[in-house]
Length: 609
Image 1 (cartoon, rainbow, N blue to C red):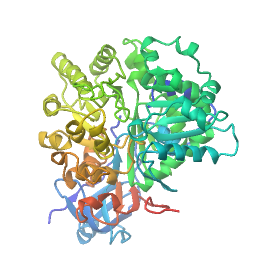
Image 2: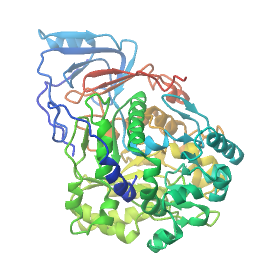
Image 3: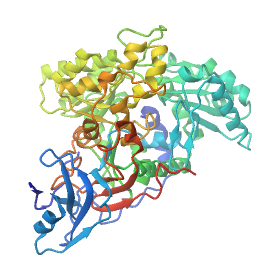
Image 4: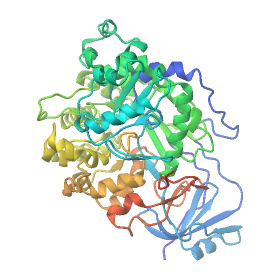
C-alpha cells in the first residue's frame, strides 16, 4: 500500500458587505472597543505557524479518512506532529514510519470520519452578528446554536409575527430590529404599515437580501433621515430611495442610510455579542477556515477583537473592499491606499495579500441583479458599481497583479465582468490570475465557456436555487431561468474550478448544508430545480475543501489531508459517501481539529432547547 509521508520542515504560510457605509460607521464604533490582546508568542506577521519542537507524534485512528489528496484519497490513520501532518495511511504504517520516536495513538475518532477542515470561502461576521441576533422573521427556517426559528410563510403570517414581536418588548421606545423580510414571499411592506404596528417605537426591517431597509417614521426621525438630507445626495443614490414608503435599497441603503442608523441598530456591546454568536455558529458547522471579501479598517478591528483570540476554533482571513477604496481614492493612489488597509495579523486572523473584492450588479434576494432579458414584471436591476467605474478599478488592480473577487448575480452583470476580464487579458495577459466569479447567480452556457476560456474560477452560493427557484419561477424571472440559477453542472463539465460559500446570512454557514444544496437542488415544494445542474458528492466535498483553499490561494497549506499541510480536520459521525444524498445536511459533527488541536463541540446545531 502506498503511504504518503513528508518529513516536516519549517514552512511559512504564503497567504497573502458591508461597504462604504460601514467603513464610515465602524470607524466610530471601533474606537469604543478594546481589541483583544494577542499573546506575545503569536506571530505578528502574516500567519507564520510555529512548529512544535517536541518529538511527540500523534497518530489519529479513524473509521474513514477522506483526504481530498488525489495521490491517496482514502486512509484510516493520520500522523500529526505539532500543527502539521506527517503522513497518512494505516495505523501500522504510521507507527512504522515513526520508528523509535515517541508516539501516541489517539482512538478518539476510531468510529468517526475525518475530512479536511471545512472551508466557508466567503461570509460576513458583522452582518451575521447583527441579523442573526435580531428578531428573525424570514422565508426559511433558521437552525441556530441556541434555537430554531421557523419561517414566515406569507404576508399575514409575517405581519402577525412582527406585531407579536413588537408587543413583547416592554419599553415602547426600544428598537425593534428584524431581518428576513422578502417582498416576493411576504408581500409589500411600507412605512405606513410599520407605523400602524407602532408609532412610538423605532422599527427597522432589514430585507432578507441585506441590501434593503424599510423604516417606520420614528426610526427615520431618530436617525436624522429627512427628504432634505436625501436631496443632498447624488442622483444615482436618490433613485434608490423611496422616502415616502421608508424604503432604501443598494446605494441608497449602504451609502446614505446605513451610516445614519448604525448607532441605532449596532451598539458596541451588541456587535461583540453577535460576533461571539457567529464564532460559535461556525465552529458548530465544522468550519476551520473562512474569509470575508470586502471590508474596512473599522470592520476589521471590530472583528479582530473577537476572532483574533488564539482560542478561536478557526482561522479567519480578510480581503479589502475595492469598491469602497475606489469611491474614496483616485486610481493613481488606489493600490497604495488598499495596501494601507492591511492591518498586521493577529492571532487567528490575517489578511490575504494581493486580493481584492469588487462588485458588479445588485442583490439576487432583492431581484436587483442585471438581467440580459430583463424581468417578467418589467422592473429593472441595479449596478453596485457603475460599469465605467468598475472597468477603471478592475484595470488598476489587474495591472497591480491582484486576484480580483467579484460579486455577481445577473447574466448581464456577468457579461460586464467577462468583457473586462477579456479586455485586460488581451492587453496584459496574466497566468494563474484566479479571477473569482462570486455568488454566480445567473449565467448562460456560453458564459460558462467564456469563464473557462479566460481562466477564471467560480465561488458559488448553491443555496440560491433551493431558496428561490420556486418563487422566482412565478415572479420576475420565470421558471426556465429560475431553475438554472447557479449552473454548477455546466461549470463542472467545463473543467472550471469551483468552490462554495454561504455569504452568511445569505445562506447558513454550514458547508454540509451547502453540499446538500448543490447535490440535490431540492426546493421547499419538494421538486428538483434544474436536474442537469446537480453535481456529485465528491465534487461538492471538493468545493468546501481543496477548491475553496485554491480560491483563496491557500491550497499549499489547507484543503486536503496531505503530508506537510496543516492538521485541519472536520470530524463527522458519518461519511458523506455512505449516507443518502438527501441526508448530507443531517450528518452530525463531533467537532474539529485545528492545526493539531482537538476541538469538540460544546453545542451542536442539531440540539434544541
